[in-house]
Image (tube, rainbow, N blue to C red):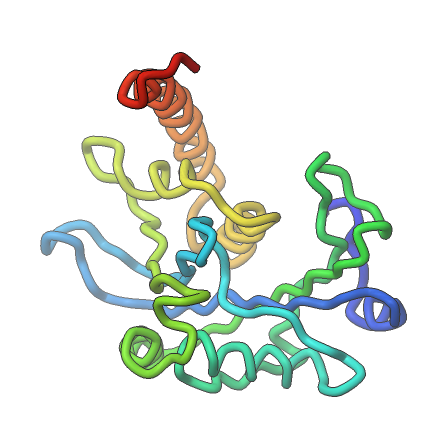
Amino acid sequence: MASGQMSRDEALECTRCRHACHVLLYSETASQLFGRIPIRYIVLMQMRFDGLLGFPGGFVNPLEETLEEGLTRELLEELGVAVPVSKEDHVESCFSPPRSGTYSSSSRLILHFYVKKMEEEQIQEIEKAAASTAADHGLEVLGMVRVPLYTTKSGGGLSCFLSHSFIGVARFQLMNSLLRLHLVSPGDLQEALRSSQRTHAESAQNLQAAFKLTGEQP
């Protein structure tokens, strides 16, 4: 359990705090990559305006709306669909960690995380609406992304996805959800993380070399 975690009711007692709600939407699927690699589950994330990966959602005001009403409003703006979210979908609430990586009430931002299982057809409709009718498409949201839960022979898939940059605790929320929902096994996630660490090291070397393109040394 992450430090700084609290119940939904405890979080709402902090009236001077800001609140943000986000949700992981997923479904089962029988689809196969290249006709032979089982995809098994569709898990949605999004590329944010700041270039970081995160979950759909945003700031809510508990004084004017419930957390779930605020989240549904944000989903309509970002996905083009008012996905109904209930208290039963709530997973955890915690203080947003400051840049130092430690949790503190001084951050005054409480994150509420939800998980909602849907039908594959509903997920597909969300993806279509997000790119065609969502008010935030191309602005606050640069596009929806499916999380690859498989691993290819070349090592691509989940490990490469985890090597990208995530906003705040989104990477932790993703991995914790994958394990809690049994979407991936602990062993597969461990191997993906090891491979992701190697990818991070290679990326750091590539970034060092890229400085030469600017005529500057790192």
